[in-house]
Structures are given as structure tokens and as C-alpha cells.
Length: 283
Image (spheres, one colour):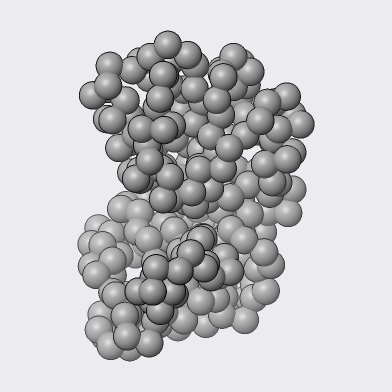
């Protein structure tokens, strides 16, 4: 059996009882380590599970999946995923590969940013398409995701923005020379995401992500150091959100008064928040 086990958002204790039972009954355990991170390292997981955990980087999962699935039709193998197993398409691909090899699969779900983002006060059924914002480079400044933001905004829905993570990435020079030298991990901040959105808006002139647009910055959701701050994009630029992981919510063109009342408690400045809400929304 291949178990794909969601670990939740915080630390080793967020695993479900069912997930823990699967892990304890597995002969091999892999931890996917490139789409998200916990607040603790694999040593904490190993101590809690009483099992050795193998770090599975992007290269292993995408090009060496046969090693992960080896003998999984005869023994139990657990593949651990931060958040929920279906939060990344890579894990869907692993399920497809297992099915092709006639390996039974059981997915054990857990909390992910996709549902825990409700902590910001906006109602989950008022969210539209989720988008990902990647790091700009000097030569690559993609903005195709902005079309999804516009679509959400046009029908009044909020947008969850997942922010880029760079783990075990190679420079172009090292990649070209075949050198296994990797760049330090990088995690996009709310501030960087806002800067890029404002740049895209400046180029596109859609009136969607302006300095006055209302948004909510979220950091380390589901952990003991969770931080949620609401305000205009220009206000969020100046907020120190601390360490990773960060995400950003763009408030839609429609907002229920209960949503406004809830997120008001997170406002950078209550007076400016009230003024923005009065200007931009009708209840």
C-alpha cells in the first residue's frame, strides 16, 4: 500500500491519528520537501514517529518515483506531504504512477492553506481561483496569473495567492555546467508579492491591484506564530511579516459586512481600513 499522508501546517503533532497509524505501519517513509515546509525538521518527525524519514526532493519525486514505489504492492510505504496531499499536482502524478503499477493507494487528508486561509475572516465559498506568484528575475517577469485575478474580481470573488518557494534550485551557470551546486532556499514574502502585483498593475492599468486595493497578508497560518494583517496593498508593503511561509489574499470587489467586521480586527490602521471599506464596498 502507498499511503499519501497530509501533515497539516505546523509541526510533527499536526498529523492525524489515521496518518500516524499509517506511518508507524510503513517500512519506508518519504517526506516531500519542496512544495511547502513545516516549522520543524525531519529529526522532530523521526522522534515523534519512531521511524527514519527520507527527504524526497523535487528531483527524486519527479524522476525517481520508481524508487519510492518499489515493492509498494507488497509492503507499506508512506509519502508525507505538508498540508494536504492534493495541494500540489506532483502528488497527483504519484498516484497515477502507482495505479499504473497496480499499487493500492490510500490518501489521508489534513488541513492545508486552501482551507485554513479562512482564518483571515473571509468566507471560503467567496473565494475564486487560487493563483501562484513566482519570483521575478531580471529577464523573466510573468504576469499570466493576473488574468485569473481579474476574472475573480469581476464576479466579486476573493483571490488566494500562493507565494513562490525556491528549494534546491541551481543557478543557470551551474545547471549548464552540470554542477550539483544549489542556491540557498528562498521564500517569497507578502511584501515581495505586493511589489510585483503593483508593478503588473502599473503595466496593465486594470485598476485591480492598486495601492488602495484591500488585501490580507498571512504568515505561518496554523502555527503558534500565525500573523494576519489587513490593509491596502501600500500599507502591507511596510509590514514585517517575519519568517515563512507567507500567503496573500486579495479581497474581491464584493465583501459581506460580516467579513468586513471580522477582518477589521487585523487592520494595520482601523481608521484607514474603515475609510477604504466605506469607499469601495456597499452593504
